[in-house]
Length: 161
Image (cartoon, rainbow, N blue to C red; front, side, top):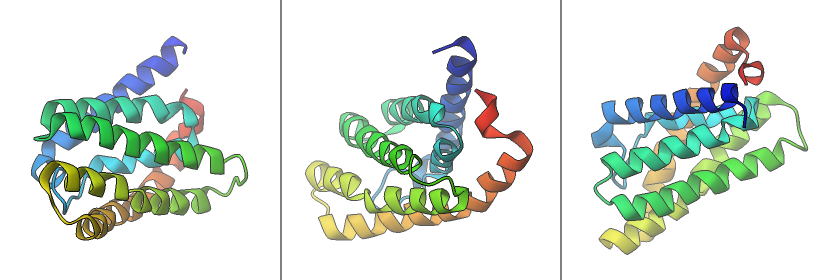
């Protein structure tokens, strides 16, 4: 990894942490709206953002989560699996809007991983937690689609690193 890629991913991780800190009460329950999840869309434009997102999720869960260890394991797994799937899908389609929509769907569907965490850690009902976390995820990522798509036209995420 070159210095430019490392720096960009460090900045991305820091942004993920900073936004998470601002919305902390809404990011760690079975009804969650984790706004920095919008950054997940960056991998659609450039797969090199994978590590910045993962590091941001890891550090956010380490510093802010009331269920630190559970969130580190399950939250990072959720993000890594979902990002990996969208990177794989991007090999078969280059339609950016389709990939952004698929990203939102994949991340939302995979919230069963977080629901399993909430069931194991807190005894919350699995299905209810899956539905509520998936709703929060789809709302945040759906709002993020036009934002990230428009930002990309100005910033060109694919050329940053």
